[in-house]
Image (cartoon, rainbow, N blue to C red; front, side, top):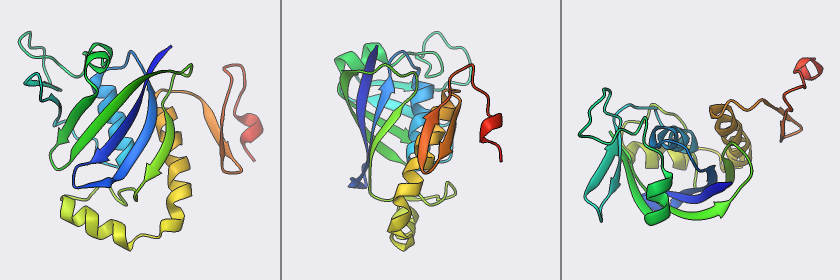
Length: 182
């Protein structure tokens, strides 16, 4: 199945990045939701994807408008196959996305790497506040946060799973959660 390995970096500090494989055939709105999970951002409806070479902007219009490309319905594939660099912007954050086509057989994103700290709260209102707050957080929590982030990415795609012994297990459709309840 076609998929994309994406490096997602904050423009204020390129050392803060996430690398994840995402399935193809998802909308830009779903990509927005993935980015919000990766950086623990507020899932704001005011966001846009900017293709600077094309002078093209894709965003959630909130209504049907035939003159605008709507992120809720537009699939990423045609754009990701042609353009390897995209800018994502919401009220506060500017994020650079670089993508590479790859093969991947799963229906949900796979987190490959977290560099730099996660946003400690989605209540942060400025990039300065973010940079100040991440310096104060314990770096030993990164492993736990990475597991939590991967679990949220899987949940975004409605894939049943469980976490045991700091590992995520994808459940088959015929399995139940009863054996995991203690």
